[in-house]
Length: 233
Image 1 (cartoon, one colour):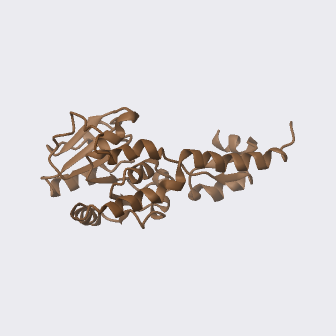
Image 2 (image 1 turned 90 degrees about the vertical axis):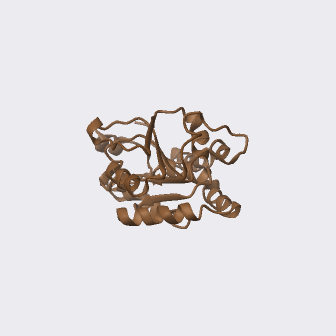
Image 3 (image 1 turned 135 degrees about the vertical axis):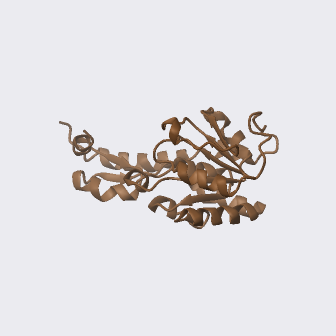
């Protein structure tokens, strides 16, 4: 169905460069359109008057935070390893757990908070000392362009992530890990050096040109440029 739709479409937009060659073989009018970010919304994590949620405000620190769907592509074995190695830290996992219960690690310093409203993500993010992207490497994650990466940066948070083609583009503001031991070492480094106000602003500035409004303008330029070439069926 995906291939058929790709062939029939007048224009195709994809989220990552990794998908471009395969899609262009099906449809030459394929363009990369990465995700954007709501900068003002996630900047609330930096505001002094943003309240901390009652179910997270007393977590022992440092707090290592994640938000997103907790599915099979999230490396829960890595989370379990990190929590075992750093029992004094809190690992706050926000999002729907969509894997069997027996696959969910059970440690006192791993807190699965469940689904939280989008409107409150900056409130929870304010509590994060470091944000993480603990993907398993597979075809899906290698081709992914995670929205949460930009949201974490818009909050000004230090980030530790596994290596994927799209995430590696942000290696100037993201600590990239390639093994679980490396992930732990990068977390140690991020916790020890959470960054000056200048570092926080550098992270925010990195995604400042990537608002949803900016993405919309880029897409509309392509659409408007192609409309005159489309011949009605």
